[in-house]
Each structure stands twice: as structure tokens, then as C-alpha cells.
Length: 240
Image 1 (cartoon, rainbow, N blue to C red):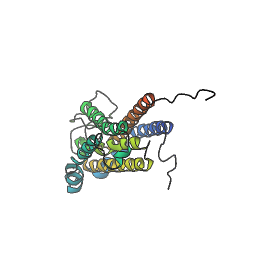
Image 2 (cartoon, rainbow, N blue to C red; image 1 turned 90 degrees about the horizontal axis):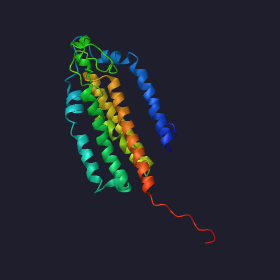
Image 3 (cartoon, rainbow, N blue to C red; image 1 turned 135 degrees about the vertical axis):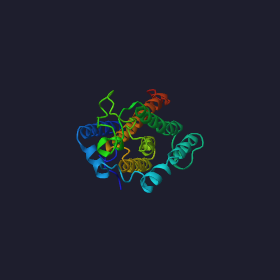
Image 4 (cartoon, helix red, strand yellow; image 1 turned 135 degrees about the horizontal axis):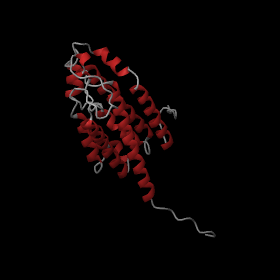
């Protein structure tokens, strides 16, 4: 069944619309009180009772930490020894896929490194010592440990959204599956951390947007490079 155009962006114009449209929705979320409201679903003044639960912490956090890196290793090796659907990708797109994931992870981790935003479990209303300060309040410390924005664990799923951009030029069906898989895994990882009190929902949503935007930017650059290096067919000479 073909996917409607509004569901999956198929060209640069639609990608830009989705990027800017989702940015607008994110900003609306940031200026609402939804983050704290959702945090109160899972936490109280006694903390977050499911913080150390085997499902949310062990299975969906600790036990899965190495799996994204195993997939990334497969993509790096696949640049030169492609298997499966990677064989259908030209070399430039295989490099794009592998390096986009690393670029997205590096972007998220770098922002976290300089972030003063603390996690929900650090807040006073959840038994901690920090005050709630917007992650847009740059340079203002909230009294906690900081380093909690955006969501790092969710990036282990969202970073692979680059597969959508690499495959959409050759295998649209495979591209849609990469997009759905990356978004689903990222949301599940983000929800697990939300339930534990490790992140707000905005942290997860911003991670998704950052990974998408990095992937879109790399895709545009690679597409431009391919267009410039593609051999030009000389125009036919009149009369021949």
C-alpha cells in the first residue's frame, strides 16, 4: 500500500516542511507545562518508584546499551563489505548512513556535556535539591548535577533515522521501515527514561528532532556532492 505524501517526506521541500513544522510543535511544548505534568505521572515527593525496576532500568537501559553500537559497527563494516539491503546502496550512501549515525550521537552528547539542566529525579518536588529551570535558560544553574538535556539513551534509536535518508533514494520501502524502526525504538527508550525520572518528554522529543535534522543536513550535502561529481552527458550535436 503506497504511503501518502504527508506521512513520509519524499523530497527536500517536504523534509524542510517536516523539520520546521516539528520545530514549531517542539517550541509550543517547551513553553507549556507538559513536562512537569508528565513527570508527576510517575514521580512524587518520595521520588520515582520505578527508577530501578528491572524492565525500565535493566532491560530497556542497561542490557541494551551495546546493541546500538553493534548495529553501528555493522554499518561501518558495511561501507566496504555490504550485506543485505546495503548492497543496493551506492558507496556514497553507505558512508552517509554510517557517519550520519555517529554525527547524530556526537551532536546529542556534546549538547549534554554543556547542559546545566538536571533530571526530574533531581528536582525538589521529587525528593531532590534542584529547582525546575527551562533548558532554554542558558547559563543558569538549577542547583542539581546538570547534564541531562537532551536525552542520550533515546538517541540510541533516533540516531538511526539516517537510514531513512540514505535508503529513500534507492529503496523507498526500506527507507520507511528504517524511519519507523528508529522512531519507535527512540520513543520506547525515551519513555523508559521518563518513567524512571531520568528525563522529561521534551528531552526525548528534542533528541528526535536533532537526530532528524543532522540526518537531513548530511543527506542534502551528500546529494549535492553526488550531483556535482556525476559525469555529464554531452548534448547531441545537431545533424548527427
